[in-house]
Length: 150
Image (cartoon, rainbow, N blue to C red):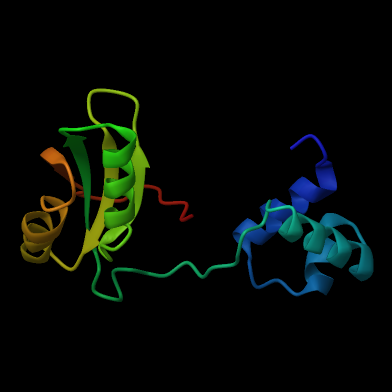
């Protein structure tokens, strides 16, 4: 991050908030003309600071309003076991996020489904069947107070 200046950071912040900004609007917001802004944006993409552009979706309108956080403990944490788990969890569509944790458990998953019935099926048929899973604990979200998206 040492090669980023305040304008680069401003470009990143604006695109995080408004990924569909035209280059003209983005340039205006960060205080540049169109061409230098476009050059900086391409450089940020090429250097991997900007990895893609997404739309924030109202999951409730799509019928995916049930959120559960799952603490997951593995019975084996060798490199081979972790690699097997990591590869397998990426194939479960309901898993929105998966983070390896330093603490009393190994992974924290954010799982999104239509309802508790579907979550129970995902837990029983998919999460519990992941390689090396020893134990899970589920925490169901009652209300999302702040969700900044990605």
